[in-house]
Length: 168
Image (cartoon, rainbow, N blue to C red; front, top):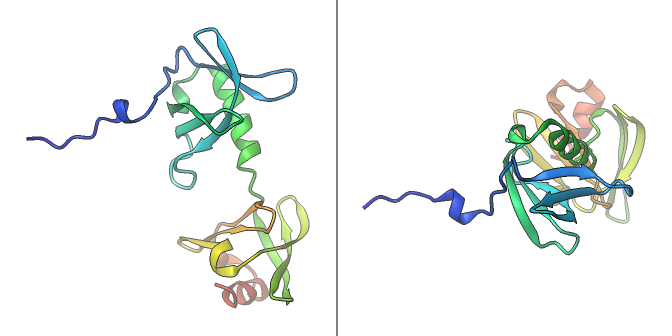
């Protein structure tokens, strides 16, 4: 008896030759398969470890339409459309410096410098909203669901480092 995992039967893998992706007049990402066009939202199955593999496409109601096994197997126009949409969905500014952290009414507020400019945001809870991804990499989610990344907090300036270490 062999215990093998049949990936093709578990997932609705889309044929990269038949699946066409493009942006419509409203700048929505659209999947066209077998003559049917549907606006879709992409989601990475492994957003931190394998960004170009297993991209799930859902309709606006959240129903799964299929999965792209490897983004590089798509034609160049479809790949570019999907990559553009993934950049939009997974927009994650990099925190370069922390100017200050304060807590008002048990709500942590961060004043930071990012690769996109200065920013102030609040998080709900340090335990749930600051994720240690290993090797000093931190992912922070603010109260509005936006994500920020510190690639290696150990390389921040001494003041920023002390502030981060006080909350992780």
